[in-house]
Image (cartoon, rainbow, N blue to C red):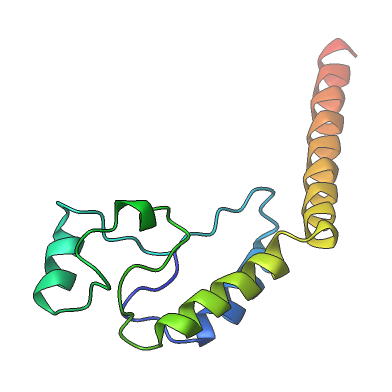
Length: 120
């Protein structure tokens, strides 16, 4: 989740690096979203950081509907788009998929080895 109050624009490269290092197969990037009726919504409303009071159509987890604390709305939007391009491109997905398939092959081989030892 991107756009937390502690996040600066450094979060985008940091998240990309984490995704690469972790070798997660599936990755879901979202923007912090203050849904009406939640404590986050109330807190941002009290601090006058909501972009509009009526915005259910902007509660998509991908649209920015509040003013971030340590970056601009535009920086969060463009950083999110950049990060999505870095994480969801074909080359990165294929790299993560190959790693997952390698792990699956290794696990299958270990299971076969265990079965062989039991039978031997």
